[in-house]
Image (cartoon, rainbow, N blue to C red; front, side):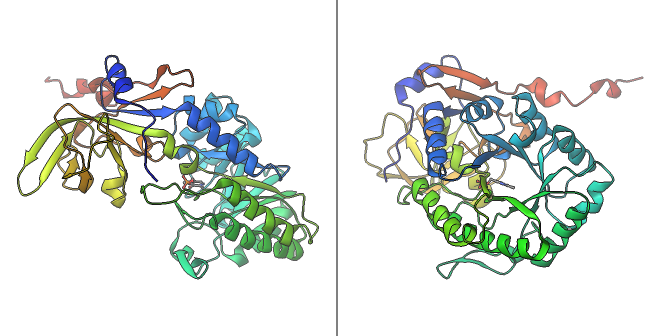
Amino acid sequence: MEKKPFVTLEQVQEIVKQYPTPFHIYDEKGIRENARKLKKAFSWNKGFQEYFAVKATPNPYLMKILKEEGIGADCSSYTELLLAERIGLKGKEIMFSSNVTPEEDFRLAAQMGAVINFDDITHIDFYEKIAPFPETMCCRYNPGGDFKIHNQIMDSPQDAKYGMTRSHMKEAFLKLKEKGVKHFGIHSFLASNTVTNDYYPTLAKLLFETAVELQKETGVHIAFINLSGGVGVPYLPEQESNDIMVIGEGVRKAFEEVLVPAGMGDIAIFTELGRFMLAPYGHLIAKAIHEKHTYKEYIGLDACAVDLMRPAMYRAYHHITVLGKEDMPCDYVYDVTGGLCENNDKFAIDRKLPKIEIGDYLALHDTGAHGFSMGYNYNGKLRSAELLLKENGEVKMIRRAETPEDYFATLDFSGLEEK
Ligand SMILES: *Cc1c(COP(=O)(O)O)cnc(C)c1O
């Protein structure tokens, strides 16, 4: 499918008068439409709830838009919990997924009344010293082995640091039941960025069957199944997008096949999507500031890997549109790079693009999740601004760009003064 940016050259030329490149920009209309579609796809389930994975895009303005669409937050750290609190999310609107979690994070999650998801059986004793057990708790399951869909290996849970073994799940449920926990959740995240409509239904079936077994073995009330994240987006233009309606229907089928006959039709389905909620609705906009003709043809941008780490870290593909040249033939081949002193700072390698001139604006696609949030300050590079393209076409700054003062904010130079 052809990838079209949600902003035009003319819009960007207008925006840069106020907010210079590089910046991340998000599309409110796309975000809301997609959120509504997700809810519709799971409307058959009475307790359905999406908890947006905050780590994907921890911006309160975007979280607020999602909140207005009825979406909660999935947090994994102290500051993510604070962010959720600051936008007015409360108690069970927040999921707290533990993973090598410090005491103070558990304490805050407990104080806020968030639903706590234990990553390991040892967390029960760890937590007991910190806070009382609430009535509802969740445990993260790792089935081990390879996770396959239609005999194709999607990922290898046996190598993942997350979750409890099957026997630990049973032991944890029994132990928590003894501590007074009344309602239980089962959580699992077995494959990331899946571009197939079969991931959630396959995972759901596995978790539903496990829920039925665990219920029989322990006698506890299982209140929800958390399918977590992992529904992906087509980063490549030739990939076909997931159809969330088909995914929701697939989960419904497994629900009716497994849970309803077991008398467990009251179970709520939870999701913790990050990438699927926001990735396609964000662009990193950057300007071509250098060209270089050596052993290869290079275009250098004013953005670099600190603005978007995925290509450097995973060699991930992010589609690039040269704004205003959408209809020109891609008859040039470039490496598109940033300015870090790291040779992996390349947004694209051997990419076919139209001829790029200095001053051209480039839109990097699908940067709305795991984009800005993975930013860092290597080489003294500063984090960019984040902008919101509102439904009415206005542009609002939702995070200013860093300044050198921000970079120095944690330093105290007075200790260096000569005596
Ligand atoms: C990262 C993460 C998610 C979101 O994953 P996506 O691939 O962005 O959907 C959800 N839940 C947990 C616990 C995570 O760590």
